[in-house]
Amino acid sequence: MELLRTLSDPAGFDWRTAPLSAWYWPVGAAGIYLLAVVAMLPSAVLASEKAREAARAEKEARAAAGGRTKASPESAAAAAGKSGAWSSIMCWHNLVLCIWSLVMMLGCAYEVWMRLGEAGTDDTGFLFCETPMTGTEQASRAGTPDGSEQFAGAAGGAATGPLYFWSYVYYLSKFYELADTILALAKGSPPRHLFLHVFHHALVLLMSWLWLEQRQSLQWIGLLFNTFVHVVMYYYFSRVALGQRVWWKNWITTLQIVQFVTSLVAFAIFAFAAAGADILPLLPDVAAKGWRAIAAAVGLSSPGSGWRHACAGWSALQFNLFFNVTLLFGFVNVLGKNTSADAKKKSKSTKTA
Image (cartoon, rainbow, N blue to C red; front, side):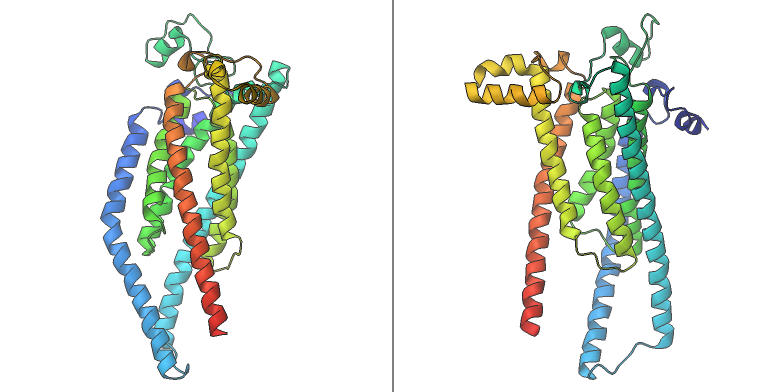
């Protein structure tokens, strides 16, 4: 009930009192998720191998009989029924996440626009450098509020208000996304690139929790780009679940790589706001002018100093940077493997023809 009340009042959102806001929720969920993966993986791998062996045996039998053999009506009906049930489950699961991602993207974009309007300016600097919490606000977050300050997520303070509400909805979505792996293993089809898949799902929970806990700078750029990617990605998976061929699979991986590269560019802009005054004197004149110009283009005219004191969420952002860099290398590797596999298939089909 408390969760429903929180979700029904975006304007009154307050992370300090929101359900699942304690650290042990993302840590506990990630731990249970990893245990479930370890427990389910052996049987899923065995089921996958049996399915491949059965398909190989059927193919060999057809080849030996000149393509005239067919599966019995009973076995064909049973296989079709099982496959159809899982196809429906996976399709609906992916459609839910596709629509959920679209709602989050549009909701966040609207609230970013509203925050700009409330400030009466086109200054987008808050997207790169959120105002840090004061000592009083930090004490309140620790559970010792003295009531001496008004909290306002849009102007320095705790994570409150409708814009942080969408970060919270995003955080909740990461719990549901754990079902990606669980459903795939239950189906007997371990995800390709399993380590990257599990690594991403386990750590993204902590990342999104830190966004709210520390009011991390850059979070809405990450949220908007990631939800856009997920709209495309989960739409693709919903079609694949129905057995449809989709030619633009590799473009999703490319889009994910662009997302992580963009996050590094955004971090460079954040660095100007957080410690530009400390770094600029160390740079060549051309690089310093270029950095200033890029920062000014997004509403940051004055370089900051001191890192953690200039912008909110410096500790969380370090973790987020590490996470994004590892994912960038992971997805570049995936794209390379997919491209190589597609090239081999094309070469094989050409030789066969």
